[in-house]
Length: 323
Image: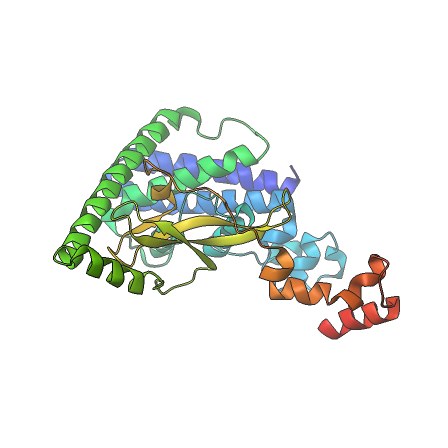
C-alpha cells in the first residue's frame, strides 16, 4: 500500500474511534458521532481509491492536483498542500463503479450519511432519528472495504463488540423491513387485481410488464417478483466479464410495476430465494456498447490485426476520426 493510502487508512481509523467514543457518550454527542463516522467513511473510501492509484482521489478538473498525484508536482502551479480532492459522494460513486455492485450500501442510504456529516459540519444540525442508521451505514461500508485493503492493524480495536452489536441490530431491522415490504406488496397486488378473472389478470399484467420505473438505471433485466410472482425488473450496472468476454450485469435494485415492490442491494441478498449476483447477458461488448463498437470499427478498419483486408494507414485514420 502506498503512503497516500496508508495515511488515509490510519486517518479513517482515528476518526472512527472518535465516532465510537462520541456515540458511547450518549444523546448529546450523537452529532459528533455521525460527523466523525462520515469523515471516517470518506477517508476509507479514498484509501481504497488511493491504493489503486493516488490520482483517483483527485478532483479531475484541477490539473495541478493531478500533477501532484501522478508524481509530477514540480510542474504544478501550487504546493501539494493545496491539492483538491473529491468529496464523500464522489468517492462513493467511484468506488461503487469499480466494485461493480459489490458495495452493500446503496445510493439512497449514502445520502443521509452525507447530509448528516455536512449538516453537522456546516450548520450544527442533523436528524436525530437517523443517527443509528447513518452510523451503521458507515460500519457496513467499512466492513466491505477493509478486506480489499492490505491489513494495517486492528481497525475496530476495543470497539469491535459495539460494532458487532450495531451491525446485528441493523441486519435484524433490515430483515423486519424486508418482510414488511413483501407483505405490503402482496396486499397492494390483492387490492389491485384480486377481483379480476384469471384471464383478465393475465392480460393486465402482460400490458404493464414492460413498464420500468423512472430514475437512473443503466440496464434492466426481467425477473419474477418475490412478492406477487409477476414480472418485475432487476436493475444494475454492466461490465465486460474477463472469463467469458461477454457483458454481464450486477443487480442493485428490483422494481415490480404490478405490486410496487422496491428492493435495494441489502434487501436483495436477504431474500429466501435470491436473485443471481451476476447475470450474463450473453452479448458481446461490440454489440452492447456503441462506443466499444466504434473503437473497434468495422472489419475493414481493424482487420490489419487479423490478416484481412485494409491497411494500417486506414486503421489509424479511422481511429483518429473517432477522437
